[in-house]
Image (cartoon, rainbow, N blue to C red; front, side):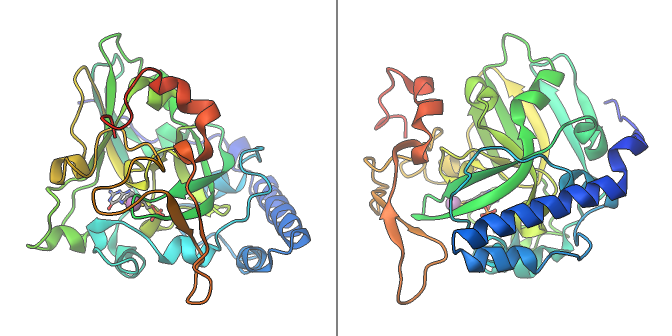
Length: 332
Ligand SMILES: Nc1nc2c(c(=O)[nH]1)N[C@H]1C(S)=C(S)[C@@H](COP(=O)(O)O)O[C@H]1N2
Ligand SMILES: [Mo]
């Protein structure tokens, strides 16, 4: 196994002044746009971070995240407030309750971080996060996240297309799937110490290679202009907006290219309920509940905020072609 050493980020990339100016610009523009739309809660959740140093992760990462460029993705969509995005989570490594990850993920060590790359690809080895992010332009994309449990959020992610990373590893023609693995560290992850856990750790997810290469598939390192909070899967997590949330695997330490379809964690636990594809589909019910509607967060006692679920979570134009001719009832 080749262990690459950390490579210095050229100082031009971490000029703190321009990075902070960019960050301020992002904050101001988002704040103004949101205020203009009357979305005061989202705007104020942004403002509450203005002027403060980024709170998570190493400085070089905060600065790179702060310099992310804006994109048209999700512009005009009403954001789920920062508070909900970072306090209502699924991350079973830190407990099964929605508030467990925010409470328990502080023990996760995200720096240093490395990712092992193996399987059907030319470039294999162990890569530091610095190497992975080196000369990787970051962008902000606002995506809807639809959990299989029928709730959803709108999140401004900071990241880069997974395709840009995959190309660097030069997958062979035999690479038909890509598998991702989350960190396994029971000393840091209280949920992995539980003897009652239904999950056979580590958490694993996978995509077909063409799904992984689709321009929508994002590798995220931040949200709301900041480095990812630990409960959201720091320092590196997938975001696949047209699939149920469980495909968007957190805190990734391994990427493996395979010829045969990997079995993902939830499929292994309950294959009748959770499949490999997990495309958002209002017409295919979960065996125990309908998927026709979703609760868009924030939702309260007096406003459930239930909305219709869209096919492919509304991203059909970009991804429907991937499933042409497939029976989506069988391939759930
Ligand atoms: N390693 C790992 N990744 C995970 C999960 C998990 O339990 N462990 N939960 C998934 C589920 S079910 C959802 S809905 C999303 C939630 O992401 P968020 O907490 O950032 O909103 O993370 C996904 N990624
Ligand atoms: Mo989920």
